[in-house]
Length: 71
Image 1 (cartoon, one colour):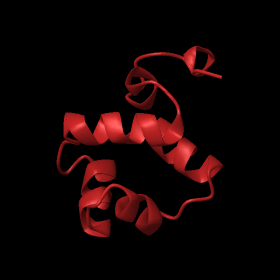
Image 2: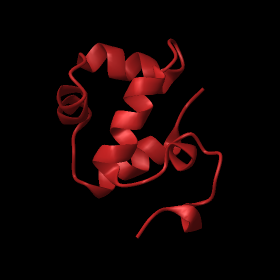
Image 3: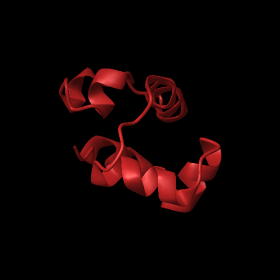
């Protein structure tokens, strides 16, 4: 499963994929595997990204609309 909202938030913050991976303390390859759907993103990493981006985990996973993002 791909996560376009994660990529959108990464892009909004002008982070490279490598920089986001570093912020999450994972390798660039691990992040790539998550985005391609090769491996699942651990829940703790989804929570970490939600905190980093200031959004909900539901939004990152595509379970809610962008309108539900916190301001």
